Structures are given as C-alpha cells and as structure tokens.
Amino acid sequence: MFVVSRALLIRIYVLVILASIINWGFMFAVLGRIRAISNPIYRVCGTVLKTRRQFLSTMDKKSSILNWVDPKDKSGEFKRQTSVFRNWIENKPDAEFPAEKDRYHIYVSYACPWAHRTLIVRKLKGLEDIVGFTSVHWHMGSQGWRFATSDEKVAGENVTPDPLHLDFSHLRNIYFDQNPDYEGRFTVPTLYDKKQNRIVSNESSEIIRMFYTAFDDLVDEEYKKVDLFPKNLQQDIEEMNDWVYNDVNNGVYKSGFATTEEAYTKAVTTLFTSLDRLESHLSTSSTPYLLSSPHPTEADVRLYTTIVRFDPVYVQHFKTNLRDIRSGYPYLHKWLRHLYWEIPAFGETTQFEHIKKHYTKSHGQINPHAITPVGPVPDILGLDEEVPAVKFALGKK
Image (cartoon, rainbow, N blue to C red; front, side, top):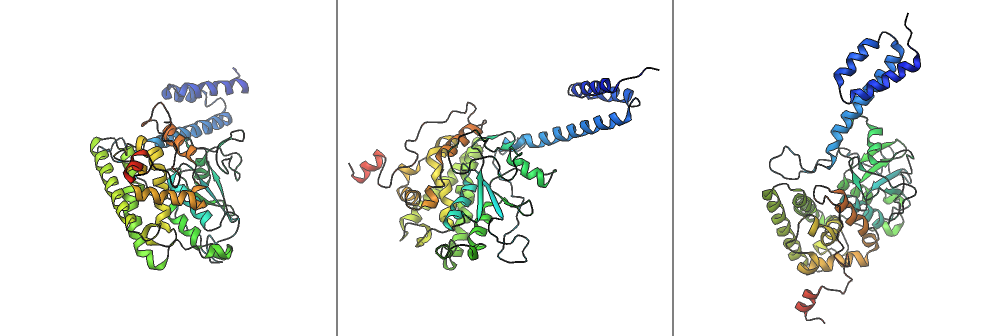
C-alpha cells in the first residue's frame, strides 16, 4: 500500500493553499482526493483555509476604509457614519462604567479634529492624572490608524506603541479584540475601560461631556469650577453645535471628499456661508469667546479644532479656498489666536506636524503623490501678527 508521510502531506496542503489563491476549484478537487489519507491533518488544514477565508473576507470589508465616499453613490457626497459605541461613564458607584481614577484610557490622533476635542477638555478639566491617553501615528493606511513603533521618534506626547496591548500594531486590533465580527470604522477618539477590557465610546461629542461632568469628585477644586456647558447658555450652545457640526466641522470633509462638482460646490458654499455667520457673531461678542461667554464653552472647543486646521490644511487639501482665516476673517482669526496662544489646553494639544502630514500623506485619492505643502508659514500667526493685506487694511506698518 502506498503510504504518504506526514511531512509530505503538510507540503501538499501548503501547496494547495497557495494554489487556492489562483484557483479555488483546483483546491477543492485536490482536497477531495487526499482527504481520506489523513483526516486529522485535513481538519487542521481545513481550519487554516477557513481562517484564510475569514481573513480575506474581513480584508475585503475593511479595504474600503479609505473610500470616504461610497463608489455606488452617484451624488458624490461625503456621508459620515454614526459612531457605534455609545456607553457612558457616570459618577455613580453602581454604574456600568463608574468614574474612577486610572480606570480609563483614551486613544487619539493629534491629526484628527474629533479626537483633538477630547484632549482639550481633558486638559481644561485637569484629568491628566485620571484618564491616560495614547496617540496613534499620524499616518492612516489601508488598515486604519496604526501605533508608532518603539524606535520611531514622532512629535507630540504619548505617540507610542499601545501601552495596554503590547502586541497590537493598529487601533483596529482593539475593536476586533472586543468583537471579532466588527464591521464598522476604526475611529479616534476611542475611550477604553481597562478593568473590563471594553470600548466605552467612540463618539467625541459624548466623550467630552463625560470628561467635564463625570469626574468632578476626582479633580482639584480649581478644575471643578471649569464649566463648559453653563445653564444659561445650554440652549444656545446646542443650537450652535448643530449647525457648526453640519456646515463647518463636517462641512470641510464634505467639500474635500466630494466626488462630483455639484457635491463640492454645494458643500463649499454652505461652509463659507456658515463661516460668514460665525464672523458676524464674533464681531458682536462682548468677550473673546463665542456666545459672549466669560470663558470658553463646549462651542469654542468644537469649533477650534476645525478652524486651527483650516489654513494649514483645508484651504489647499480640501479645496476650501474661497478665503483663508488669516486674511479673510479678522474676528475668527483673533478668536483662534487667543485660544491657541493664551489657553494652554488649546495650544499645547495642537500638533501641526501630525495635522499636515496626516491629511496630505493618508488621502491618496486627493493627493496621490503624498506631497506636503510647505506653507502657510507660519502654521499660525502670533497674537499681534497679520498678513500684509490685513496690515495694509488696518493701516499698520
């Protein structure tokens, strides 16, 4: 009787797997022939093939991570997906996610305006010793955000390998670790519970509210007084958040990722109408902040992360070039510089290297050669600096 060695069988199965890449029909035909020879090895290889099919299926689903507009959508409009994880941290001992020191960790990107919000509020509320954070590398590839390696020197605090999962190379690993069948996007910010090994939330607007409400019993007295959502302005903040999100925060993306002229024109027109509205609003504000508040509110935080990226990136990369902030919107420009230069939570969490490199080197459909423009110089002007045209208009030398 002809005897096939175990080593030979393994070689046969390896060859079959390789051949399957080219011809699935051939694979199943050969497997049918040799199955009877060694059922145990067949089961092992069958598991390998099943895993391979699952992997390819997953990769096929996830290969669209950089398709910002559905290719089947004839409108060419960018449509942001809804966040999947929407749990809440509460200041209650019996809460599913109670507020505790050193229990939560937030994954962010310095490049991402949505994640940037959480870093600002974390600092404004004095949560640096209560909620840890890790920033991913600025580059987003076909597998989404990746962690920096231990030998990479990247600007910014905590741009490191994942300190909680040393074998994880990408943010996606955290999502799949919680749910192997997860089919959504792998987004920052991602708020993580270290005790339960669970994702709490990946919705930035809700994370910042958790940060400024749930941890007050754990912060120093000076930070308890920081009120980003004062009662007398809550309705105004909610109303402003609504149109600023749709027309400005998300509006720059609608403009930049549009794949038809009609979608782009509609988005960019709406964007600049809303910027004009903000400029008019700030021109009548009795304080340096939106809504005439004596201090920054949630509305200032949510707008800042878009406006600080406008001149360095959005003007050229997203084609939002009807005007820039520094020469076309004097009140917005003054508001921006006040936040950046005079309130550390804003300026110290802004990393222009991440911002410029991420957009220009991650969006291949917009910038296929991944060239990062040199300008504008500087990324943000000083408090008393103006571009020449504005200097002339103001009669300054």
